[in-house]
Image (cartoon, rainbow over all chains, first blue to last red; front, side, top):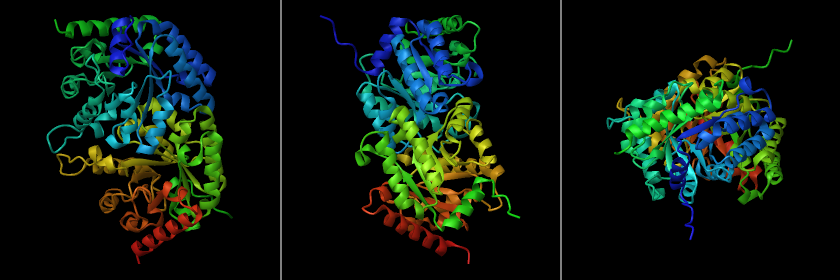
Length: 278
Length: 278
């Protein structure tokens, strides 16, 4: 008797990381300055990256902005790239950082959380009622990564403001994210609601892990933005799939993207093994 | 000799409000539950609304979520609806609430700030460096409305957190928005960088106007969400175009959308006249 596959995104993610022995998320950001202009060039560049680097990654993060820029043909290319990544055995994360009032959020959830897309990134700014359509999908099997502390230099301006309770604003966002994710914690201990935390602020990882014990962390900013997989150790929280390291330009811009992804995979896995409970 | 038309968005907005004697923004949110399924139904519903209610409005706010939901045909419909609204003499606001790291923000600005689109909504969460591509466009003639305090019930969760300095988080966002808008203040006294402030929190309008003296306010949530144009008085800041009232379901869901928009226009204009400097 074959057991049913685990249905929740947290459990699927845990199984995928264990199966592929990788925590690397391949960022697909087809900037025309690098790949040339047009939807066809964008898709072909993504396909090449999936072929070269995909086998050592666990997921692909498709940045919607580069496709939206191309209008209707861009949207078609996005759907094809998502399918290409899914067929390569990668979990597919649509990186749109959407956040809107509830009816519009429902439309965005319908737009983005459909096969072959496994997960999305969303903004917490509008609060829980606005995210409800995404959170309902998290209970039903999709993944939702909430922006908690982003990787860019200006993130500190509004996300790091000191609150009257003594904490920082993004810690409040982290607490909310943990609450939003509570109903979708799977047998693996991972919720379908994860958190985006910049790899560029490794000093924050331990605090945020304590506030969000069940959230898978998506750590963008490795490589070109200065984040290092070696520093991810406090993010794992005792689970190999507790932290995913995402690199875009760091892989796509390398002379040998496959080798760059492999080095990143090995560095992240080594960080996990050093951090793992004995 | 005909003078050149005012180039900045703030000045264009001031001229449009004076010319059309209206501060009403027509929300175009083609929810399939109301307009039927498919890109064609979405566009036709928007066209009908533009025909009926457009003549008494100054701008149209196109909610991207409902078009994104429809994939590539939805994107085409969005571009056509934006063109329809522009041809009807309305300023066109693409309501996408995008917010991402700088390279992706640049791609979003390219995607959305092109004719016939005059302005976009953006999220301040990632800070000024992330918004820089949009702010550069604001200096060059486009409009950018920054989310400061949204209209939904859950907005309070993270936007109203009390800071250590005694203010609220969204007041810090307001201060930043005023800074971001300083380089694009036009002869009208209005900046090309505006602020989205929910009409559902009229008690906040005076404080936010004091923090953002040059920002045009976009006030969503009038009608179905409970906001009232009559309460907008503190938002004008001495300028007729200082506050725009946006209604979506409140107009589209009315038996006579034209009459509903006209009532809203009259209520907003009366509020402005009561608030105007003598």
